[in-house]
Image 1 (cartoon, rainbow, N blue to C red):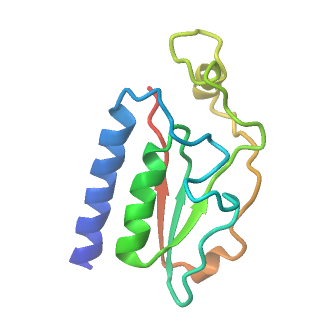
Image 2 (spheres, rainbow, N blue to C red; image 1 turned 135 degrees about the vertical axis):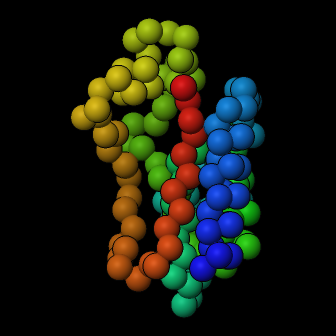
Image 3 (cartoon, rainbow, N blue to C red; image 1 turned 90 degrees about the vertical axis):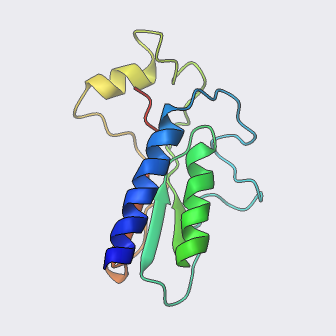
Length: 133
């Protein structure tokens, strides 16, 4: 149990560092993975009870999710919004950008393309997302 707690704290620390980075460059678009595989499909690690679900606009969170998945032999699931975010959508310097509007509206929940089929088979779920503000 201590091992999972330490791993969880490490992951949270990594997500915090990545979320605070000022990276506007992206080697991949928000709708494709580096391998070119279908980003909507989760990796299926037979017998694993670990799920790593992540949303990554610039690719930073994806890299951390892949590290966690490799280390824990977990299943990856990329969260992809139905309406992709453009660079203008995530410009936090613009008062009426999509991300600014959504962050101020507690009821805003962007629709996503796919869902995890059976959440009950996972004992541990890691959720990775960028911290824009």
